[in-house]
Amino acid sequence: MVTLTDTNLAEMIGEDIPGDRRVYWQREDLPAVTIALRTLRLSISDDSFLIDAVMPYWLYICILAALAPKSVLLNSPNFGPIAVPQNKPEGSGRGVSFKTFEDEHFTLVQFLSPRTLPAEQLATIVPPAVNPNKGVVIASTAPYWVIGTVALAYAKSAAWVACTQKYGDAIVAVSNDKATALGTEIDRLAVSNVVQKASRAAIPKRGEIWLFDEGYGQHPCLILSPTSRNEQSNDVLMVPFTSSPTHAHRHLAVAPRQTGLSNDSYAQFSNISRLGKEQLIQGPVSEVTADLLADIVRHVRLAIGDAA
Image (cartoon, rainbow, N blue to C red; front, side, top):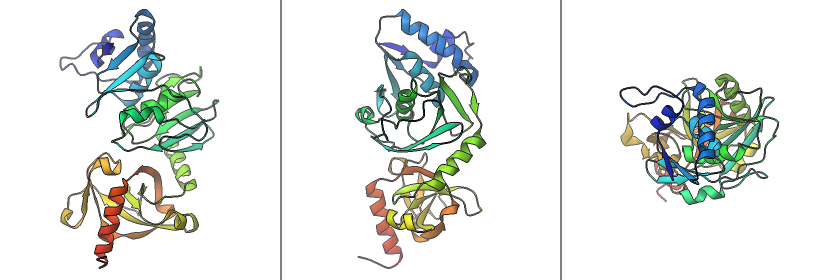
């Protein structure tokens, strides 16, 4: 097995390594990284690679595609090396909850994944088939090894593959389209507009987390009303989440592994509210665990005086 760090990769493409040994990757590096890794893949007999580095998600995807069909493991902070399978898109997808929305220029692929998804379950994640003549933009809060699994599956079947980041625009990490270069930025506003179109077309389901805006900025909330009600109604019942510890003693503290959110947060169970669907601006962004859903429901019942 060949181990590659970020400094190894930087040296391969002729980048200068700063004194702190920290590599600051730019989207313009992707073509050179792809060429260097394809050359490496063809020149050595090893059948597997370990990527031991912290990188932007789009760089992980580029590496996976450049080294395929050889096996690639991504080192993770909590689970150690994780082998990324080489699955193929099929039907409506399976393994996690997928949602797709085809826009004029690309197909948006969203999916929910628990942050504690066992590595051995990656092989069961098969993304849905999409229009091969368009690019794919992956928008998910899942860990990079899960996003990498989905992206690699589209690497040969889509015109190009990009993924969103917490900060910055979506970056094209794989391209089979001569008109779309590696490293191309997909405008954040364009992606946001498609995300909102997809959200308006989707039906919020009980247990999902959506982003809402009542005029005070975006915040996550848990959909508490039954899915059957949400299909027929113009509003939903929700419990808002906050990341602020203010009045934490009156809220239920929840961890990222329970919500799929990136930070510790607090469920404001005593503030259950009715919210118009038009105020749900993005989602679902994640899904809570069954145990957490039951716990929040119990706290809501206690808050209204139902001790049953």
